[in-house]
Length: 183
Image (cartoon, rainbow, N blue to C red):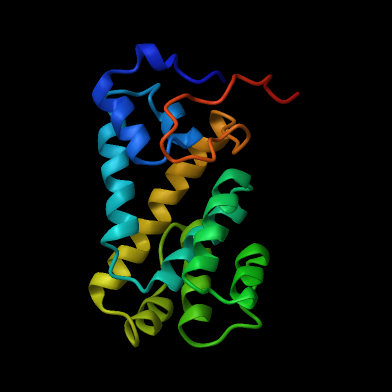
């Protein structure tokens, strides 16, 4: 799918894209100019105002990316996970979906993320286990984080968004050159 023509994107939305680093996903989201501002706002809230510890938030996000086989999501959020010092073991568990080598909160959050992905809800034991170390606010934020990134992964895969051609400078205004759609 081709990226929108930057000249056709309203100036306020172009400014929002630049403020978000001119990443390919933000350019592609401009195919929905009426919803794009709200989507950007919710994404900002999930990353900046989430009550979950950063490592647990990123563990859940990377797991969603792997479960959806959304290479773009994994590419970006593995980097963030490393910046917030999520352990290599936790990243490996996010990829495999198996919490065998994790314990405590990481184990519980990975299991809960898997349940949300597979069953779209949490069973009573899982919910109670999470509430032994998370507040209700944090549990709500976990559920919303998983759901938001399911939406993002659906979008990324539908529109075939890749990191190819993304600017190295966060101030570039140009979208990537259109590339042929895969097979």
